[in-house]
Length: 461
Image (cartoon, rainbow, N blue to C red; front, side, top):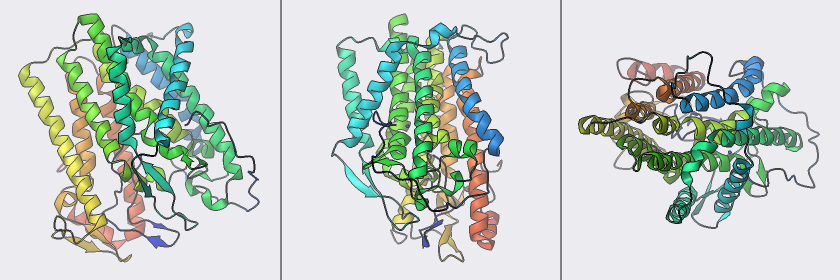
């Protein structure tokens, strides 16, 4: 879920442009049969093109991140469950090693991946083509993520009606995280090994540097598939994103066990984040033009992000509320709902305007928008939402992120981890966009920046 220049040139083909932001900002996954390889795979005998460019701190970052980010996930979960919930307390509330493993957690993770893989393969929904690849081909993708979410929701309702203890997910959260982290490592190793049998044009330039540590992290192969099953596309929005709202539901049910009913704060957090996930899956087709799909290889960075980081850190607010209940006034709740609504409105309207312009610039809803011509023959929007700031969808995202945290009160910084992390992430993504677009559009991009001086937050940044 990174951003990409919508006018980037692939295999000599230039696609329609609307500013250097081609990302729906769908949040930062592996099938049950991921270990199976194709019997007729043969090592690639062609010399691969190697990229000299490094991101995320190069080799040092690629070595440290796979170690420290999983530990960060486990630390945050441990702190969230502690009475103090202080990220700075010393000694830190480390969980005994014996409490990090539970066979039931492994069964649940395998069962969850199996279920979502089955739903991915169901012949429902439409099939869309991705962008043209370097070899001139276009892959086909099933657009049935919303169907998967709906079926999963129906199954969860049945589970609740049957009295299944979904609140037990609170006790299992650390073993579940350990299993998800382990799965991301196994998947990443499988992806790295199988990439050496992939054709040269199937490799990602950014993850094919010749440095094993860096390539393992970034991902060598662009679109690894087992038959028609696209591993990266499946993981991008399915097991982690839907798993996030399931974990949230488990936290809500745990609060019901403890206090007989869910709090208003818990209902707001669950509702806001369910809306976000539902929106992402309803607009699933938009992910086909994001940097994750068209540019980044599938390695540890995306596998860990999709399988572990998203479901176990994006929903820290719900887990925090189980141990640290908060009371909200009607006025306070109304203000938070309005903030989330404003963020969602900006997020959705700006993305919809961008996508409509890409599909049909002559449509009545976008034909009046002012643009700047570029040397590539494409045009940059300088009015409407995209003349307000360069990344209005990021602005909406940040407002929603703040609304998710406010129900947890102001006494702890932990529930605001997502806001802090997400702000840093979006600034980093914006910097990637800026670099790529300046290189591609040159003087036209300089003109655009003068017309639209603010990047994300008007009058501030």
